[in-house]
Image (cartoon, rainbow, N blue to C red; front, side, top):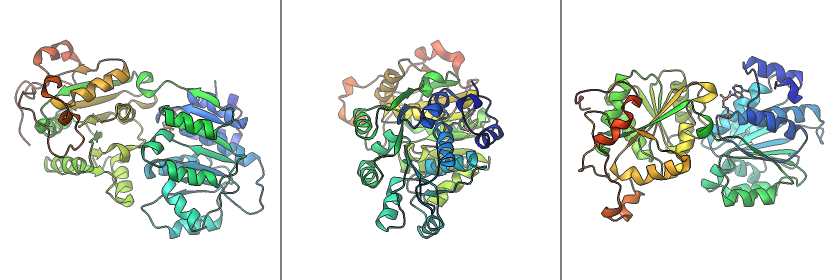
Length: 428
Ligand code: AMP
């Protein structure tokens, strides 16, 4: 299967060839022909599967090969994303794949000035990539006309619902023409997603590709049991000992992300944090510094990390396990992309074992455990006060998971993230 077989025009094939893609990914093979045939689609696909090109390429082709209804440039395609980072990345893809086409696009999200966006919209655009909140601001201010939208894409729809955007989405949907083509992408299919799909889509083509976690045998997953209060020390040690050059670290809270970034910086590791309390400019700069290798460790919360797309990202560390098991899948999907090897390391303390079990149930497998000598968990391991949602506080002690023992680790000692230190290591 080639991109030519999918019926793409030469301008698009040229842009794709420049990206070095030799063949379409499974989702592209299924989505591109269906979208070109003007079908609605409901696609279960996560980041890393090539879904962005899967909807962007046929969308560009549809717009470039058909005439707009109106003489002047009015937006004809709208792509909604849950986060600013994802909007920026999708917008980059639109520009990259559409570079040989006479189409204009604009990215619209909050956290930055609205005036430049209004000026761009006034000049006329064909494609809008936006987060729901700021898009609504433009609609209220009447700086945007969505009455000519022919194609609507809802990217990472499950995440938009998780983030509470459903009301904003409904307000936006209400001003779109009913005759449009709608493309819905979601990593998971909850009842809410299915209900939304039922109301929005007309005889959709269903597309399912294997989720990253089952497809990506390239991602080696490992658990290091450790006391909560020694996680930071262990992480600093592992980064230095294995000489990891580019590590994405996940924490559950914004506060935890900032604090960890400060501590790692004190340990001499160039670290920065991205989370919802940072300005958009700070988040963009942090991501760009990390991509360019100016910063070695990027600490992120789940929401801030959505859409982070870094080619060849070798290491992802779960400093805390996420509350929602699906987030684990999203997190580890940041590594091991496009055939590259990746390693997902989780530092798990005693009270996180119920979370680990839920993740393993979702994955339908157990994750290899490896106790690092010198960091063996002890019975005194305690949760800390910046973990407001900890499930342990609702659990009788008798039902809590037991701390890991060395004995369990022996089954997997050859799967460690590298050579294991034989002695207790420095304190940070
Ligand atoms: P996405 O799932 O859209 O976030 O894409 C994940 C990564 O796959 C991005 O870095 C794309 O540049 C890359 N990609 C998309 N399509 C292909 C393809 N056909 N061959 C190789 N890499 C691709």
